Image (tube, rainbow, N blue to C red; front, top):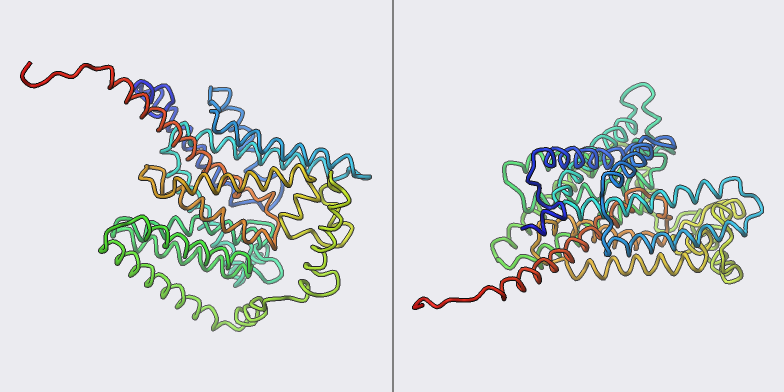
Length: 425
């Protein structure tokens, strides 16, 4: 029990309990602000800079497990700093790398606060759901021009909510959508109507983003989450419940999609966006040709060519995270990023089915990170705030498991020192 108290998992004084509640609230508020990034620097950046400073000044510790994530992300950004030496014009490069370093620190911060107190995960996801509902509602209202000036929440007739880009807005909504799906399948029946209504709003926001990456991400992650839950639960009755509710949820969302497609504006854009290859994908200097040029260019420049240089040279950004890490972070950054992502997925996978208080949140984060690896082939994710949050959740869960195992071994060792007495003595 004393070991738990030292790590902050338990609080015995009223003052410490009050601090823990306040700290958890501000952490969740930071997650909430990540859903509103219309301009930069956004309130999220200002909030997180202050929050990181205050937490660490007040004694938040970085364990050896979280230190691995810190070292990996710092090496990744060292590669980016080295790529700056290859740039002739440093106008935007240093700012880009400053954002990269900041996002890396947020990931480490989230991992550390989760390890400090795993109960924060629930309030963090609650903040994420509220943010998703807010920004999705803005995107929906903007798409249908529900009030004067609503078009500021759209871009190219696509919902973007309180984001700058529909392609970031859509994927941001996927994790809270999965959290609601998990609650529908595994939560209290009395909460089903509320969760279902919230899920419909968020799912409609994802759909109206008209981001093919977001559509694929949501579909893949929802199926993966249900599959993992079926693997985890041994009870036939529970598996039947999950399959029934999952089928009902799919039918409900299909019905919502059918209603949305009755609007001509929606159906026309949907028909256009469902084409597998767009003109900007396969045309001259399209996405795929730029990928080929970029990978060949990376062989000639092991230190990279510098952040944003690729887009200025070829007219469009890389739209491929692997190419992006090669051009903007060099071979060092590429190798570190790939290693970090693979380590996160492999280590997280080992813990997926273990009964722990933080297991549902790890399950969601792991599934969505895996989905991001897939969509990363057609989009850049190195500056997505929620991606670093997801990495922090995975590594925070890994750190919690490592601490739990150490405490278990310590308890077993202490138990072995206690002499046993037979009933007859």
